[in-house]
Image (cartoon, rainbow, N blue to C red; front, top):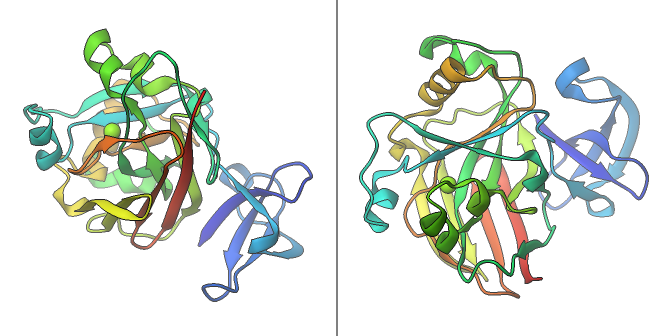
Length: 258
Ligand code: MG
């Protein structure tokens, strides 16, 4: 099931995307399905008549994972860490499909990073790897936007990854998906710049959830970004980045200079 968050000009609402490609509709839901389940409200609107919003607003945290694809670690001359390398992104960085990514004046190099995002569905602490996927509500697409120059000069990654608008999520959450081998393609103004598969993660989705939950209590709506394959690179103001993951859809955002 594809669950979107959207607006028609009124308050944000949730809905299930239904119908054939190019002719989809949004079937409205009561409240937030992450907390009360999928309860239809009997409204239907054409997908093209709504504006999609970030499908989830993380209540407490977005957990990023660094260097989780060997070919990406190598392209930046980094070694693959033996254990997942975690960092935190503030939820104020989250924006939705089509929202502009604002490139801050402090940075001269802002990079895209196409990633599979895991949305947590239940409270989880010290989860075993074999139980970890039971904690997942669904999957969406993320752009782990990074001020590459500040990432290097700061040492800590909080600022480089945490600017407002640096965590686009969308276009919706797919709740029925096997994340183990999905194609991920990133396009910069239509040109393919990343073409990877989630099967090439060093630590897979279940391992990441278990590892993160051993440190932090995971809450419903928390998001884990699972790392990016090779092909990262800078974006110029005025360009668009589209990230497509097999079985989910495409997340497209324009980049603008403040
Ligand atoms: Mg990343």
